Each structure stands twice: as C-alpha cells, then as structure tokens.
Length: 330
Image (tube, rainbow, N blue to C red):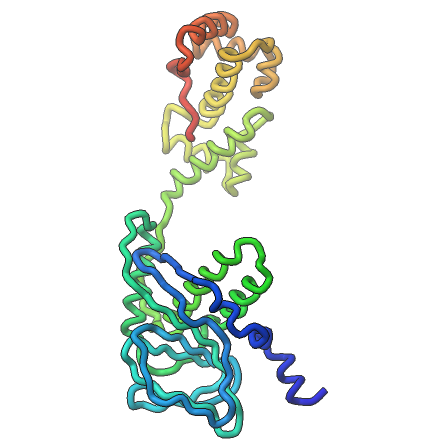
C-alpha cells in the first residue's frame, strides 16, 4: 500500500468526497430560538497545492475548518498560517484570501449559512437565550484562526453519515449538527468568561413529583417508602422529609393511601368486581383492611359507595371523585 493511499484511508472525512454535494441537496433550515439558520453550503472540499482563492467576502457567515493539510488565510489585511485542526470564521463583509501550501494540498470543511432573526413566540426561553448569546458572540469573534478545541469538525461527518444512511430522524440529526458547529465554534474562541446559567430545578419539588409519579405507576404492588427512596437515590428519612416539606399533612403513607383509594373509587364507580378482588388489584393487603381505610376516609363502606355512585353516574356521567381523595398529579 502506497504512503499516499494509506494516508487517504486513515483520513476519517474521506467518505465525504464520494458524494461531495450530498448535504447540499437538502434544503436545511434550522429554527433556533428567535433565529432561522439556512444552510447554503455544507461540504468537504480540497485545495490542490498552491491553489489561491483571491480576496472576496460574503453577506453571510462561513465557517472554515482544516481537517488535513496546510495553507494560509488573510483576514482583512492580516495573514495567518493554517494547519490541521484549525478553524476560522468569516462573517458578513469580511474580506478574506485563501491559499494552499505550495508543497501540499489543504482540505477544508465548510459550512456557509445565512442567519436571519425570526421572532418565535413559542420558543423555549432558555433555548432562545442561548441562541441569542451565541449569535451575539458570533458577531464579535476575533478575525483570526484558532484550534478546533471543542470538536466541531466531527459534526460534519456525523451529518454526512446521517444523510447518506437515511437513518431514522436523519434530518433532525443534521439540523442538530449545524447548531453544534455554531456552538463549538463560539466555544473555541470563548475567553472562559461565565455566561448565562442553565435553568435549575427546585430539587424538593422535583423529587416529590418524581416520587409521586413513581408511586402512581407502582402502587398496586407492595410499595414501600424504602423502594421509592432507593429509586431517587435518597435515604428513607430524606424522602420522608421531602413529603413533610411539601405538605406536612400528607406524609408518604397518606399519599400512597390516596393513590390507592383513587383506584378503588374508580373501580367501584365503573365496575362490578368484588371488594376482595379490588383490594388485591389496588394494593391493599386484605379486603378487611380496605374496608377499614375506606370507612375512615369516606364515612361509608365500599358497597354503599358503589351503589350511590353507580346510581349517580346514570344520571350524571361527568361525576367526579368525592372530596377527601386528591386527584392524580397529572
């Protein structure tokens, strides 16, 4: 195997030469926050040794990455050397000149996009804030090359392979790679200053909601406080404290009882199963225990409740749950 062929085989982006315009056949538009990013060029190209692209500019953004080879770029009036692993951005109106090294070719991954502000009332506020921060930084990035330190180049190959294989969701995947290239470019130039913070959860409310949802999905089994705490990677004492913090009158046992009673009431109102079978299906250890809890909470026996509610349902189909049994959290 010749050295040249071996080098080509080891070049990870070589498959992109096979269908050079593959990604450009797609009409790719990405709505990100309050911006629309429309892809104009998205490809891998090669400059033979000594090739020159004379001074020119665009009214849009062009992202240039050097995955192999070497060359030179002039941004404005400042020349810079280019080598493998570098990137540079040419924004609207920036005059630039490119040339490959006289002794060896230079490959370039290029993403050329038009970015237009497009207010979107339905945009997620955090996504919109991140998109805005990225766009503002794009406008102020220094006109000089830097290292692709955050790995934007693999996004090109990921997008190409998604398109070539037509795997499920490939168009969405490609759009995500476009946003990834923009973000990773900004990150490569970023000074390290702390930007906006991502949204954070109220952990007490989050853990409580997660616990209740897990209880609603598993209440028919012999569910214990310890089981739910383990699911949340908490101690039973910590989980019990969370329930007390949210509502001191509804500890874990009361919430679980409420969930089970909702299931019992639903079955009594709409079905004819025996009380023994309902107790078994809804997580009560025995029918006698169900009777005890039901009388205490509803001030009547399950049988009396069934007769009353089934009679009412025939007159009022939209009958709701009785007072004293909280609704599902959903």
